[in-house]
Image (cartoon, rainbow, N blue to C red; front, side):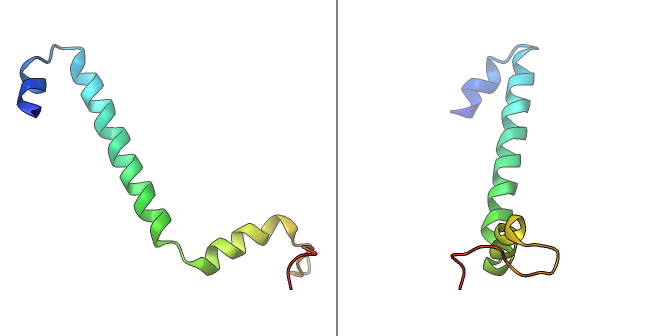
Length: 63
């Protein structure tokens, strides 16, 4: 299947395949990093906008 694509590539289509490869690599790397995040880190980052300077949360729904 890929042989058909690579045989019919002109000079400008190389840029299209190169940009697709960059996008796929970036997407895969970001997906892996997101899946490896700890739950504690995600909770801490989500509470940052709701904290005042003393470290206490201003979120009224948090127990």
